[in-house]
Length: 196
Image (cartoon, rainbow, N blue to C red; front, side):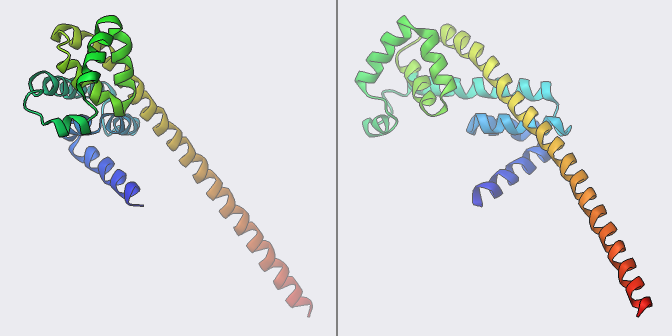
């Protein structure tokens, strides 16, 4: 119940503040905010293409922040925090090897799987993946992923609208049936009363 309330609040806030809130929402919780943006695009609350641009820029900015954390924060981040994030020296060595041999695959897994994705992005910085290579691979995957998530939200919004229309028609038909049966019962009752 609390989760639904928070989701409803998020939708209302993004609908009211539009792109000013969409940008930080995507940085904090990218996939959910992106799907919500797609849903709001169906109802005209947000423009689909402007939302797409904001989502791509915000997601790229967030990923660049994680990369910078790995690249410049390795010496400043305590060992305890690194182990809590799943970043150990052996993981960094494996990821360096993985990045050099299978860059696309590692980035694709990191971007598609939201949970381990942060670890992959931080590790890319710690593994000293060249920034231009990081940006090009990350941007290419972000463009596709963001578009797919926006479409999921958009089509989910259309399905909800269609469901609402069918629900309205069903309610109207049910009300009509109840009224007809009520009138028939009333007429039958009056006819029976007159015979007595």
